[in-house]
Length: 316
Image (cartoon, rainbow, N blue to C red; front, side):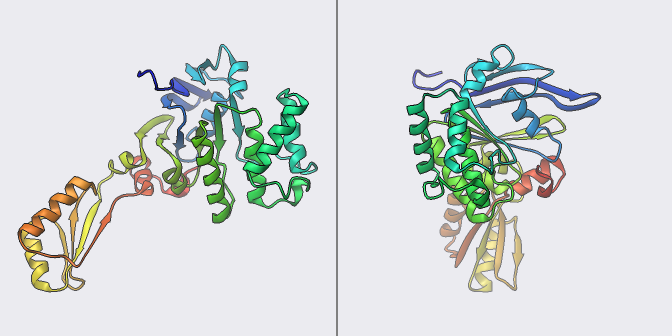
């Protein structure tokens, strides 16, 4: 480890959890680098929420070596709780209190001094664009506002690690993107985010690294782009203006799918820069010019289906 590199925010080795005869987690290993967004994906019942509950000390594990923010989850749970924030699937907002009162309540629970409570509340209301609604009951908030307030409440303790368990479930696209912006800002400020989500697009947009669990085990782990390269089906599509150019390209490049009506040729490709340069150089050397070029790579939907055998609707 280099001198400038921060130690991992979360390390998980051999995490196991069962309920009776039902094994939920069968020995998973995870590592989350500090100051990054890590997404945990999996089908219904894969153990995503259980993992969050164990790492945030809400429930115990049956086995494994678990460290969060440098603290052992089993031996030093109080230190873990002091270093983390948690936002669950359902907003923990008190509807009878105003936005400012909800934040002040959380500050009191964190034993902040009165002056510090006021400063922290004011800062979070500004950061999460809730100043105008600060003195209104939370019951009057829209879904997006409630979720922003809920995340802000999880940040009152200024956590090193923030667990977000399906934070945008039920939000409209605009509110969801507003939450994405806030999450990126938090990470830019040094917070580590551990995210579970039912939206594959969300993981693709936000996560620096993704782990996919199925059957209680990690079946894939990598950056979004690395995971997409695990699945075949990527190709480059070339469109030509005349049949003669199409035929010449098909003869030159060999493998591919030709559509004579559309004057297109699909060539298998990983979508990488080097392979694209090679393709274009071959066409240029043969004096063959394509009118249009587009790159198609598998998305996380394809990855999820290929590695779990389940459609994306099962991601929960």
